[in-house]
Length: 163
Length: 181
Image 1 (cartoon, helix red, strand yellow):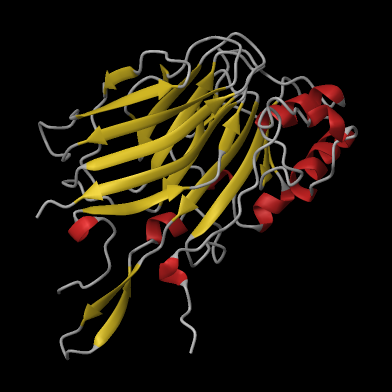
Image 2 (cartoon, each protein chain N blue to C red):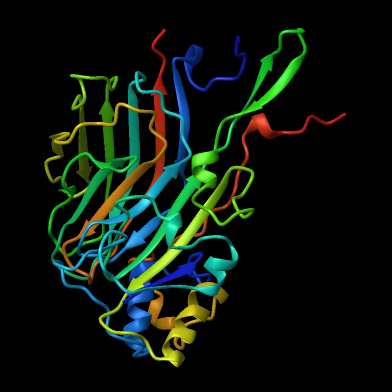
């Protein structure tokens, strides 16, 4: 059955699948589900791109961490994305993964950087990505101290055409 | 103990602002030990607010491995529902809605929103069970938008986002403009 519909991006190559455009915040010092886009229909063979804004407040000399979950799978342990100075810092997260199929299930990585010139944290996924349709994209967060607040905002999930 | 409320603090407080309020008004002791991580897979005591239950969100709404962490969290989830226009066998146009049965199964029967929507939840993890007056005050702050006792304490000119989340104005692109006749 042919499908005729609008597509975002040039020529339909990139489609915005979903996202979240107001912030979630947390003071949790252990990993917490912070910001999510759900009921998505991300096909297993579609390369994906995830972008999210990050920030932390003053309150303590502590850093903040970010991690990605797809469906119920945590792709890696939360990684620090900023320095540990007692300062209000803004940053970003971007993650990529390729087609998710048997024998190619850890083909993904992410980068997170901040305005305090901390070298951007780069890490490959350490867990296998789901090979089924992805319905949930969750940004997980963790602070180094309950005296600071970490926020995540403007989460956008994009898929790329495979033909 | 984990307390889950519907929505976000209507007075604009973020998680840090709510934490400050809990401390300033002596409502309880938050659990902030890094070794403590609440999830829906552990043996944790929890309480869903009446508004959560009314809206169809029970403990079963949370997906597998959901992390509640500790302290205070203002969580936000969006759910996108899409309908496709397809050409049917008789060359007419039809609307096909994507299967959302899995998502609907998370909600109490008949409560799952039928369009794209947002779910805001605020949860707090305390070391102990809250007395009734403290729970009611916390619920009023989050779900009713009750103001803090001293609002000036939460305003920081040098760091506006320290205790508050910025309000966002909805804007619509040209694709949503209605052409004038």
